[in-house]
Length: 194
Image 1 (cartoon, one colour):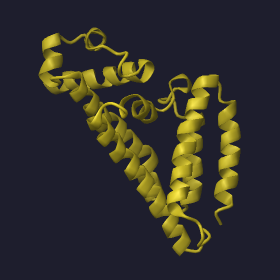
Image 2: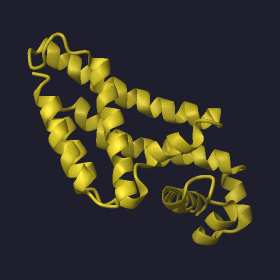
Image 3: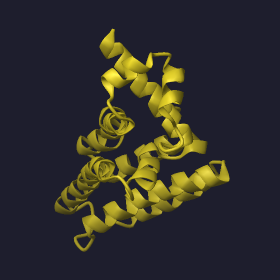
Image 4: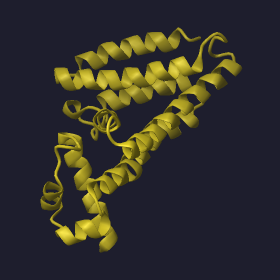
């Protein structure tokens, strides 16, 4: 039961933080939403920061690994995988909400300026994503599917910043029209790497 309470706290807290932001979400609100006792909360998480780091490591990180990283690592057609994954995340994924943006991006913007532990945890996620993109582009260069003068690091920066940026625009505009335009341009960009 204790592990179950911990999981419930993490999942409900993640949902609240995704909707409202980390700093705007109070421990009392988390406790009220999860319907666990204050003692149970503090048994599992001595501080809100410890809970926040657990959310990054146990919820956000596995989602990013399963969604962005592992499919790209296993792909025989990385450029196509990058496009299809991005398209799916923007237009088909029911977990990610238009009005709330990207959970990892939101936490990075809100927390990394003032919390070094959050910064380290999010940095690890992003570096893993970035490295996976870079490695896939390097392999495509070696296989002759991407031009030899393409810089894999630049490609990874462009893809990551483009995804985060368009997620934020979708949140601001509260519609997916910008996603459609972005995906067209992303496809053109990826095609031009050959």
